[in-house]
Amino acid sequence: PARYSRFEGGVINCHQAGAYAGQSFEVHGSIFNKFAEMGYSSSPLGLPISDEFDATRSPQGTTGRLSRFEGGSIYFSAYGAHPVYGEIVAIYERVGGTGSSYGFPTGDPYAWNGGMRQDFQGGYIATCDTAIGLGSSESGHFMDCYVRNGGGAAVGCPIDGGGGKSAHWGGAVVMQDFDGGSYGRGAIIDNQGTSHTTAWSVHGNIWSKYVALGGPASVLARPISDEGQANPSAVTGVP
Image 1 (cartoon, helix red, strand yellow):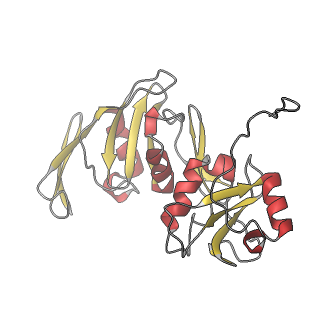
Image 2: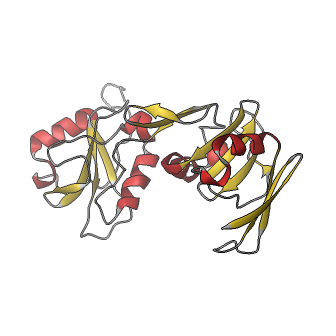
């Protein structure tokens, strides 16, 4: 719960309970207008948890401002004021927000392929109709891998590869199948039951060969890295 007072240029919200109890935060200008358009605190953003402040300059050279909310943030730049929330903001902030290669949002989130998508200066972030790592006790490992490998644009969205769309046991590993995005068909694989801190992506032609050999049950066993670029061949010079 919170109390508020509106002003000609914006609003001040005072939290009455929770982690921010007794603290007040202002929202004004273009960010306030977007907050109001979305339905104030009844929107997916919830209540503000910061005053407006300068955002990190994007790699594209864009500057702007932002206000943080319980469920996300609203960013203002030359592209206007746009909210980033839900699973998209979780991915966006993990990679560095406006300071990442994505830069500032250029539009609001919209429905796309059964999930949501939001466009940014340097690309887009997409969510799926099935959550990343759903069903795994180590879902954070799946999300780390998903973000590290380029998110929905590269890895794609979960599909039913025979064990359902959620994460499932596949021999000695827990895995989630993906349709591939720019990477091609593959999976994120978590080596549960071993000492580890993340999951790994196997995709494209390497995934096809891995499956043909028997996957985790083959002589290769479990993956211990993402795909990387090999050094040029000493024979042909071709990478």
